[in-house]
Image (spheres, rainbow, N blue to C red):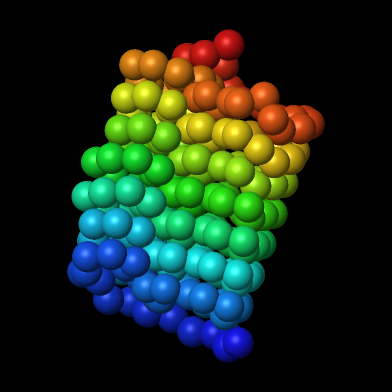
Length: 208
């Protein structure tokens, strides 16, 4: 187990898989009060702060760079978040993906928790594209997404595709556009989650 505290990176980052502005793979390691400001370019598991985050906590941290990914798991803060927790953290960069699991904050949030966090950048992808999270199977509480979201299928202002978890006290306000399974808040939901006090702007999103 290790800890990263009060650390930062400012340069642009180029790589293939598991590419992050601060850390590529973060496994059983907590990151606190740290940030990255550079743009990040890669293929799979690409993000502004941490490419792949497993069994770890990210707290009071942020990323401001734009993120460019040519494959899956692309996020403004974390590309692939597994069995982890993100708290009081944010991403402000735009996120550009060409395939699946593209999110303004997290590409794929799997069995993980996101609390008091947000994304403000625009998000572009193909499938499972969301203003905050591309695809979700975890808990998301007191969080929001402000950016516009553009994709093909399973496209949502907050979550692109949701299949489990507690979704409470969240909102999104961006414009949402896509072809199939598109929604102002969630593109497609498997009806396995508990929803409480969530909302989206029907005028800006274009969806009631």
